[in-house]
Image (cartoon, rainbow, N blue to C red; front, side, top):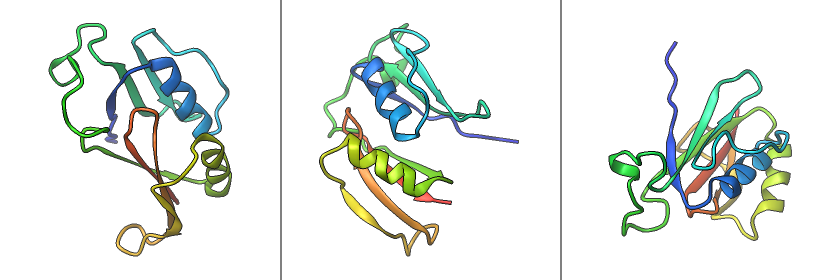
Length: 128
């Protein structure tokens, strides 16, 4: 089995962790470290890594935030089995969506929406 494990650079690991844990309906908990956290599904599958800009060695692309637009051109795409609940949680986290819930005709063919996280990344959530 192969899985992707995206890691994004963030300004505040704790704030980003709270955002994603809330979006996915998980129990609130402190981040794994001050400068890094892993958001995992209930079965332990890692969904997303949160890496503080320049934290614990940084690594070449995460040494410092670039001058690119917020989100550095990345689009985080998640498919969830609790779409209606995730939508309700998302509405409580942001003041507006980039795209309101609608069928994605050119994608998986299911309903989805897009919002921005606290660091400006586009986050698209689609029903399974």
